[in-house]
Image (cartoon, rainbow over all chains, first blue to last red; front, side, top):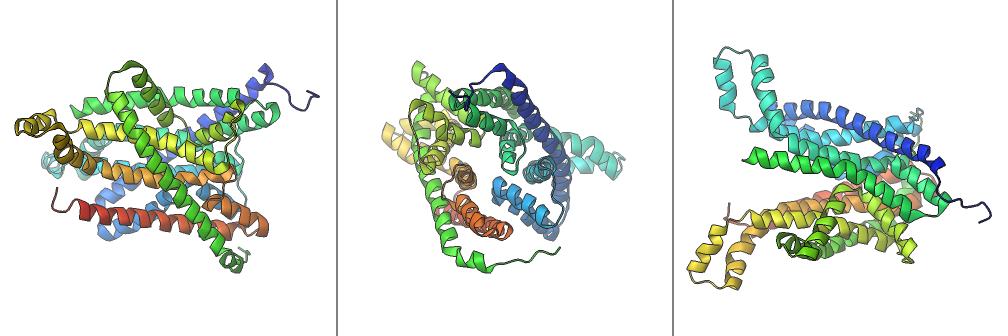
Length: 217
Length: 221
């Protein structure tokens, strides 16, 4: 062997765990921020008039029509050019959160619009204020109905977080890529990575499908 | 901000970028065509309870849906090397996209097929239609209408995901941009133009799909 390529060993476990932790961290934070922003955007779109809606919609449309990888490179280059380069984690989180927001916004908008107007009228005529109707009627009903769709977007964000590796963030796929170039054992490492994503994503997607079926009945 | 934009160099390289855009469309169209063909078989295999095929279909669909696209591309590009199969970047991206498209579309097709009630099948039988006629005139047209929009979305998704070719050195739009910017160091300009090109491509696809659907489903709900 000559020591150039060393096989995979238990010493690499820590390195891989760092990658796993980083993947969980960046997707968790992005899903959280993206969901909060998505609720706001969704509500704004469900409430506002045609002009505002069109403007908001076209901005979000750009986020959904340009590949995530291009957005990541563009944003991190842009910040560098502006003279304030961001660490990969922050640049990645910002782009991934906005990307999540664009999809979540549509999901929540659908949820809010699914709450019939007559329910709001009923709530208001029971003497609830605008905010009470929002807090006790519109939000709970609108948010609950979109849970499966929300889960679907969240899972796709976990999978898309692999792309943050292009701007240098050490998430799971990038650590595995570095291990591959050292060990020259691509198959074993990649299968391990695949299993990790699968055991996170599969049970949740099954759960989402079950909830969806139950909601439909 | 004291950055001077140099658009000239991008304009000079425009033909190469457009060629990259052509390769992007090429690989995504091909991945859709092959994906649809495989997805039909997967959907049929999953709905029929014939044992080995059933398991193969379920495994394929679940792996395709639950692992990142980048993982599939690495698997095709680096992983298959362990079996002595060395794919070119184009083939690696194509096979990964076909694999994922087939997995997602199989579920779409199954959902579309199952959304048509059995009663319609029985009704057309009792009207004296043959099996082929039933499928040709009753089941498949309705099914097609239901899977049309999911298929369009999958196509757009394939276009966007083919951008991962940048990581394995493919010569589609992103990879070409990466190569050109490394020659000139005008990273920002090149990627801005590429983002605009992607936007135009997706909008073009969505718009033509909407026009086609208007024509196809004229007078229907």
